[in-house]
Image (tube, helix red, strand yellow):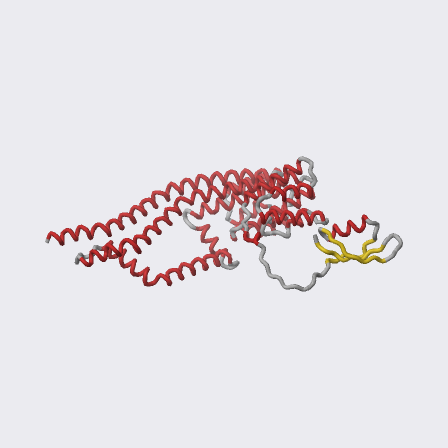
Length: 406
């Protein structure tokens, strides 16, 4: 609730000034009109000056995609059951467990009760509700099928989450092997090996090559560890800057697309996401140009984002989407032909869904092949690391035995 100062006139034309508490300015106006007053002005009351600095704790709470999917499904079900939007959002706010998302939904509910549309209320929270979500909600409000659109949004997010999870799961095992091997090397080199080396030196044993390599690595890490950490931190920051910078990001994305093995996989992932997103937007009733504009802003790869921007400009002048994708050279012939058929038949959203299904399956197959290829390489790498560590410890023992026999 907030305090508002108002000016109004009663049914006899007399001026009335006062203050009141209301959930929003729109609620205050509605209350005054119900009292039979002609509203002249309603303004928030300026609070007395006070300096307060506080950071809301909810800003640090992460909102998972699963939370958004659950809320979208629940809201779709309630609207489909005939529950009014404002009531459904109030119920949703009470049931939401995520504190940050709960607070946002409560504010959205207050805005709606104040006369704001659902989509415009969501626009105030771009870090919580993606632009694609807002645009689809706006289309559902105009078409009068908000429950159906929300269901499509939930299905879209579910497919995106499943797709991302498959990619992460496929890369998880190789990354764990790599991290484990690095940790083993560092621990052995810094803690175990120096004790053995001191024993061998005291015994006058000449150190073999594997032991010398690891021992010198130990000396280097101990002497230069601040520089090593600084270099690693600088590389991480530089990589982050290169991924975010508007001028450098297209170069990085182009390099990623041109890599021998990962390039093909990255291209398939981007085509699958673009097709799925555009299909969801079009099936929700969003016009082509608006859908392409949203797609451009939600596409993470700068190369494909540029292609979509160019296609949007050409389509706005009467060009065909499939033709623009073909000219770009970033889309293989198969999806281009399928999109062309969809444009001619007037079923572009359905054809894009088929393209997305095909490329998601292709990504699954490619990930399985990549995992099957990478796992033996990492196993051989870890085996070589373990073998070198064992050799660096055991070989001096044999030399020590020979020295003792002499």
